[in-house]
Every structure is written in C-alpha cells, then in structure tokens.
Length: 210
Ligand SMILES: C[S@@+](CC[C@H](N)C(=O)[O-])C[C@H]1O[C@@H](n2cnc3c(N)ncnc32)[C@H](O)[C@@H]1O
Image 1 (spheres, rainbow, N blue to C red):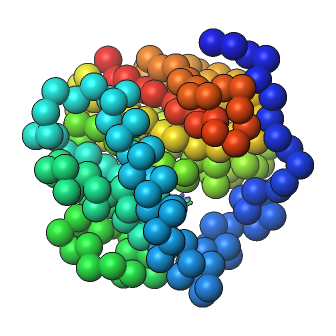
Image 2: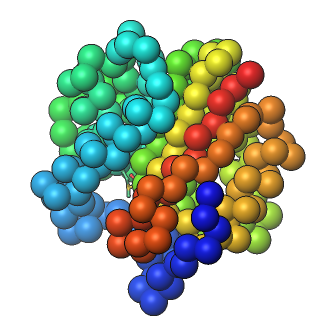
Image 3: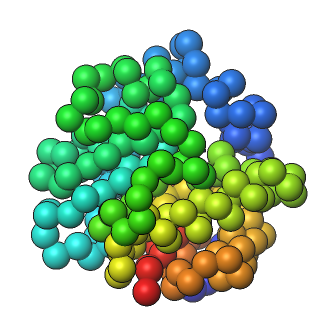
C-alpha cells in the first residue's frame, strides 16, 4: 500500500462540525440526503465494491447494514437477493421509505442488539467517521472499542465486516487499526481505491472473524 497519499484537509466534514450525528441529520439535511439520486447512485456503487471485498459465494447470506440511513445500501442488497437487516440511530431515516421488509432496527451500532453468531457479513457505508472523530474522548473510544468487539461477536465464524468511511487523516486509520488489534481477534486490512486522488479515493476497512 502506498502510504504517501495525501488528505485534503481544506474542507471540514460534517462530523467535524457537529457534535452528534443526530444534530446534523435532521429537517432539510435529512430530507436532502434521503432524496438525493446522486448519493443513491454513489452508495449503490460502493455497495457493489463492498460485496466484491466480502467475496460472498452467493446471495444466501444475512447481512447487517450498520448505519443504514434512509436505506440505500440495504434496499440494494435486498434487490440483489440478500437477506438484510438495516440498523440506524435516526428514526426519521428508518421511517423515510417503506423498508419494513428490511427489518429496520433503531439502535446505536456500537451497542447492536443481536445474539452472537448471527450475521454472515456486516456492511457499513459512510458511518464510521461519525464514531471515531472524538477518539480522544474516553466515551467515544469506549464506544468504538465496543463496536468492534460486538461486530466480532455477532458475526458467524468466518464472517466478515467491511466499512467504507472517510477518515480525517492517516493517523485516524492507524489508531483504528491499533485499537482493533488490541481489543479483538479480527484479522483485517485497509483497502484504498484511487489512493492518490483525494476526490475519487475510497477507503475500506475489511475485517475477518477467525
Ligand atoms: C452519511 S449517512 C450514510 C447512510 C447510509 N449508510 C448510506 O450509505 O446512505 C451516516 C449514517 O450513519 C448513522 N450513524 C452514525 N453513527 C451511528 C451509530 N453510532 N449507530 C447507528 N447509526 C449511526 C447516521 O445516523 C447516518 O444515518
């Protein structure tokens, strides 16, 4: 992996400007996100890439969409024939479209309310950056550690989790990697598409349970 790629730090991302995701995704912002055709198209492309990384042999798998928002990813997984559970913290996202078939669950993904060994895979797109941003705060750090521990627990043996997210810089990625190796038995790595183009770059974290 080329570690010399640079991060475009000029423009602050919403998670840097808002204390909580609940403060950001409301009213017009929530409506604009949920009705954006271009975001929907992008999230579908990212979903296909995450499926490629997961290397599932067929669509007979149960997938958790963690931080599903209005459900672009979960709806697409459903279209592709996967059994899907969609989880988010924001009720107005879960209610935005008719996604009852996707078993919407209102919960914090750091404390997912599921039994052990349930999911074949977990996909989380564009959500993780909301959780690690205040890693220096004890509570946020504990939340993040619990997220990785719980994802390990609720995945079936040999199950995999893939996160696409927007880390602020390389240090955040190193911190996350460190925290996972110290607190879980996950094997994992980062996959970076278009590493040298800040606009096109997509960063994935792929984790495999033993
Ligand atoms: C940018 S949206 C992405 C939504 C969806 N994954 C997509 O690709 O369209 C980020 C989502 O992450 C969710 N999120 C952030 N932190 C969360 C947490 N701790 N638990 C559950 N959902 C969370 C937010 O509520 C929001 O819906």
